[in-house]
Image (cartoon, rainbow, N blue to C red; front, side, top):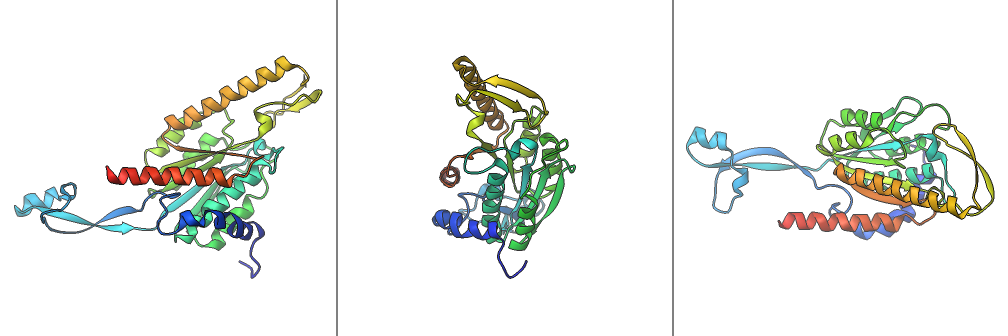
Length: 297
């Protein structure tokens, strides 16, 4: 990395992380899953030991109860699956969707590398799904962000389901997979997401633009579907048309939320016309609360 900090990375660290830093001190349960555990040495059972850690094979061999100690595996592997299809090149708010996706990846990536974790990425684009293997350090995160600066604007994008399938194969260690997409594809991404969730902690970040949820009355518009290239003219002055569009968009978002929930993944929605940091902080607080409740049960 050059002596001059990359603009996006530096801006995220100076602004976003300062706002959430109070939640990031100590452990990282507010954002990243708890550390894993590897088996360590065995020793004779003592009163007060967790019976779930009894090594039954060694106990049977020695005729004396033994428990297996554990060693914390502190290094987490975070893999970002980023939708770079043409629909992500759209935005009518403060950002385009692909810009917001890069900011999300940069922020979560900074949190991960600050904790000594490894980050990798898979870009679902027309290049066939570029893979950046997981490594640690800010310089590696910067390389990921450089490739996220421009979305794929032409050519058929790598289907989200294919990208998730490939990410599941690339992420060999149990860790965290963060999927950043508008989830507008009609392929079976939810089925693959469910399979990945069986092994990894999965966070689905849904990027939404306000014009995808309702249309303002601005006269006749010539619209182009960025995914298929189909064109259509509509009269937005029609209240009936606007109501039908709004209802269909609402049903679509509800269906996406249901698919993510049924896959067993966490769901975070961010909008291009709003400050997305409060949504991230709220999600972190909820995740931390669930982790603490789980630890008490």
